[in-house]
Image 1 (cartoon, rainbow, N blue to C red):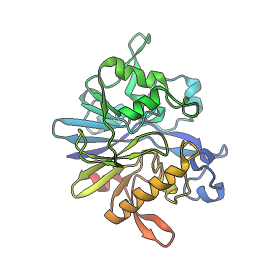
Image 2 (cartoon, one colour):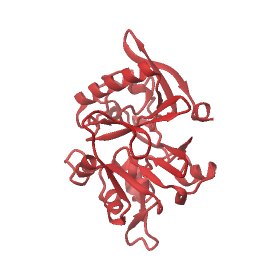
Image 3 (cartoon, rainbow, N blue to C red):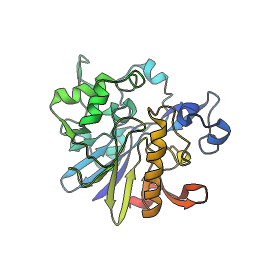
Length: 286
């Protein structure tokens, strides 16, 4: 098995929204804001090369939305899935599986693209299966009023129409051991219903793709919960459970949205679980 970081493009979000009730005087220490209160956000995806399978975890926003839509998110940098894949010797047509932690637009938008005539949509990975789970698919396709702006039909329904969609069953416990794609999955419900956190065994380490359970290293303190989360008190419990496991077992936490830190480990302290070490993907994946 080999792992590769894939940069799907960078954007900005309101720092207050990203940290909920936490005062700016605290969160700006780790996530400095610009004059508009916006903080830098990454869309760092992960590519798993495992035998004949090439599995991409999350796909960023994509490029099919309007200029007005992207104007809300202040895109920055020159990264894209295509250039990032090419840097590792791959093409999007090589991808066999696209695993989506959840179906918010900044995690799955790159899975679907315009067709050649811009009359409709088609899979951006023509040879891949798209993986979600039954409960989250139902949640996303019948969205509540709080999340309706995050679950965009054009990102989601074409997966099913293409015949490439795969829905996994949801276990009764937090962790699904040895999923169909070969890694364990931690299910979390605080951010959105049945978000999936892949836990990948790699060269004696456990690499956890944290998605929106831990967006940045600045979110390590338990009360530092995003304003986007639908059930913030549940996020508190799920973070505590997962971070204690991470500290106990020396998990390596791959941060999808942290523009400053790629991979971290954590440790127990008198104040709770806190940062231990920071690593680059090159250090861990070499």
